[in-house]
Image (cartoon, rainbow, N blue to C red; front, side):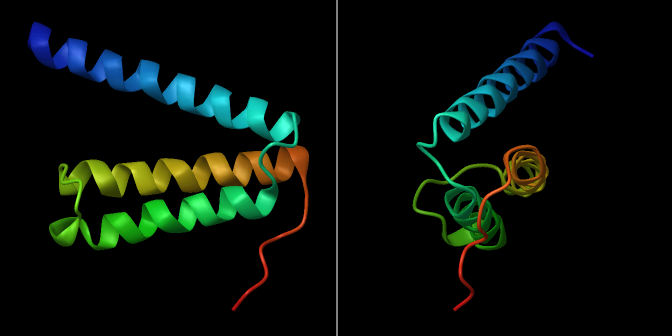
Length: 89
């Protein structure tokens, strides 16, 4: 692994830790509820499926990875803090 790719991976890991911590804090303070987290998961997944038409383009592989990670975070937060699910349309 080159030095540059190592630094890029590290920056991604650091960003992920910040995101996870921020979402947990917002949930603990009831600034986000379970339905909000579920909506965020859905939006990230939608962005991953429509990566080629994304108005904020980024790597398609990164969007798929982000969708998987957001699902994992959403599941954890839902189990840890509970709350009502989003109403299904």
